[in-house]
Picture 1 (tube, one colour):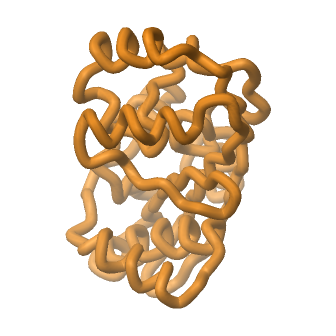
Picture 2 (tube, helix red, strand yellow):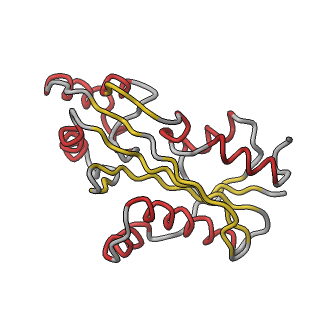
Amino acid sequence: MTLILASGSAARRAILTAAGVPFSVRPPALDEEALKASLREAGLPPREQALRLAAEKALSISRQSDGLVIGADQMLALDNVVFDKPADVDAAREQLRRLRGRAHVLLTAVVLAEGDAVVWRRVDEPKLTMRSFSDAFLDYYIDRVGEAALKSVGAYQIEGLGAQLFDNVEGDHFSIMGLPLLPLLDFLRARGVVQA
């Protein structure tokens, strides 16, 4: 069975590739910002926003394709306030200041769609606690990572220097990276996409 990743995320591609999953990539042509705005205006909680975005990404491709389509989305929630990827380095610095010394949740949603239907969905919720780092460390971090901070909802790459921002991490590593891989693999084995 054909498997399509409806995402332009390099991290999600790398996770699937490293796990030996055969797939192709077709990023969806959605106005994601408008969709987020409408979900937030409707008052949906962050978990449901992430699931709906993942579903819309998957369905937008699955309606035009044969096979299974993976859609994914990740949101950062701090006390029910949702953070998006920072727009620039100054926004990244401010976002990290707001997260400093506090715990937040990464809502990591994955949806599989086939035709017009969602056939499987999952949301993992890793909890990450940032340490109370100094302003000097924050400046050092931003200077070192630069615009790479704009590529994730938390303005950090925990697989690199961003690990130094944290006191505690609870949850699945793959989900923190952007894809709940182990439950996804379990479903793909059941569907015969990967070997059981």
